[in-house]
Amino acid sequence: MDRRILVVEDSELYCQQLSQILAGPGREITLAHDGTSALELLVDRPYSLVITDLALPGVTGLDLIREIRSRDLPVTIIVISGQPTVESAVEAMQLGAYDFVLKPIDADRLDILVGQALEDRRLIDEVADLSNKLRRRFAYHNILGRSRRMAEVFARVERVGSSACTVLITGETGTGKELVAQAIHQSDFLRRRGKLVAVNCAALPEHLLESELFGHERGAFTGADRQQKGRFEVAAGGTLFLDEIGEMPLGMQAKLLRVLQDGRFERVGGTESIQADCRVVAATNINLAEAVAANKFRSDLYYRLNVVSIDLPPLRDRLDDVPLLVHHFLHKMEERGLPAKTMSRATLSRLLRYDWPGNIRELEHVIELMVVTTPGPVIEPENLPDEIVPQREEPFSLDFDHLRPLQELTDEFTQRIERAYLLRVLEKYRGRIDRCAEHCGLSRRSISEKLRRYQIDKADFKAARRPRKSAPPFAMTADMAS
Image 1: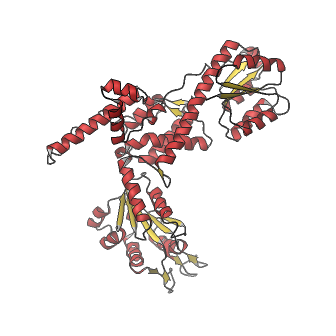
Image 2: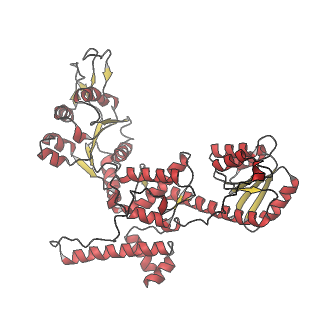
Image 3: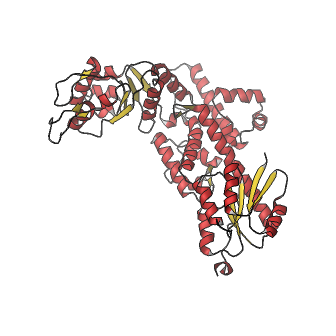
C-alpha cells in the first residue's frame, strides 16, 4: 500500500530538497505552500504523514496542527523550523507532533525519522482496522465477546428477545448486566417501540423508590405539589430495567410482586388502577436463592422474576475476550480525544494472567489509566498499575473433582494444556501459523483446526507487534531559545 506524504513548506528551495529526500518506492509526495491548502488536501483524502514548517503565511504550522487534531484526522505530524521558540516547540510536541527537525535539514536523519514515522503509522492504522473488524464480527447489540460463555449469553438473549417474559440477569459487579438488558430491549424493538427505563433499586429508600416506580398524585406527601408519572408508566411500550433488585426493601418487594402478578398498579396517594404495559428485566449481583433462604428476599417474587435467567460470567472465566476488549477500549479512548496507543504482547500477556475482580469495568479503568499515563505510543508492562499483578503463573490448576469420570478429566486437562501451549507459541511467533506448526511438529491444517476448536484468533497476536522506537526527542539548545 502506498504511503502518502504531505509536505507543507512555503520555500520552493526546501520543497525541492524535501521531495528529493522523501522520494522512494511506495511513497507518494504532495506539496502545499500554505496551511489553508494543506488542510483542504487533508480533508479531501487520507495521508499517512504531514511534514510542516511552523512559519507559514496565514495559517501557521501550529494552527494547522491544532486543526488536524480538532478534526481528529488520522495522520502523523513531523515539524520542521529554522528558528523555533521554546514555546512553539513545546506546544507542537504537546499537540502530538511525532518529532521536531531543525533547519538546515540533515537528510540522513530525516530519512530515518520518516521511515520510523511511517512504520508506526502503519501499525496504528492496522490496529484500528483490526479493532473495527473485531467489533463488527464479535459485537452483539454493543456487547463484545467471542468466548464460548458469551456465545451462550448471546444465544439466550436472542431466544428471549422477542418474547414478553420477565428476565433475571445475574452476575458479579462490572460484568455488563445493563448492556445485556439493553440488548434484550433492542432485540424486542420491532414489537415494543417504547424506551428502556432504568431504576437502581439500591440507591433510594423505600418511600422514594415506591414513588419512583409507581408515580404519585398531587398532595400524596409533603412536597408533592403536582402529579408525577412513575417509571412503570414512562416505560410503557418498552422495558423497565430494575438494577440491583436484590437490594430492594421487603415492603417494596410485595408491591412489585403484585404488579408482576396482576399487571396493574396505583400511583402513591391515588386510587385509579393503571395498566402496566412494559417488559420487566431485573439484575442482581447477589445470589437470590441464598437471600431467599436467609429471609432477605421473597421467594414468590424470586420465582416470578426468574422466568428466564441469564448468568453473566466473570471476566476471569472468559479471558479469551480480553484482547478483543482491550482493542475496543483503546479505540474508545482514542475516540474521546485521548492519545492513540497500542499494547505490547508482554503487557497483553500480563493482562491475561490477572483475575480481574472488578471484571470489565476494572479492565476499562485500567486501560484508560494506561492511555493517560503512558508517555510513548506503546503500553509496556512497566506502565501497568502496581495492583495488576499476574495471578495465573501456571496455565492450569491440578485441582480436580475425583467424582468425575477419569476420561472426562483427562480430556479436559489435555485441552487446557493444548490451549495454554498454543497461546505461548502464537505469542512467540506473532500469529504465524507456518512457524507455529514447525515449532509444534504439526501440520498447518492441524494448528488451524486447534485454533478453531479453542476459539483463538491469530490476528490478536499479529496486532500486538511493537513499532520501532522513534528517534530520541530533539534537545533544546541555547541557540533555539534565543
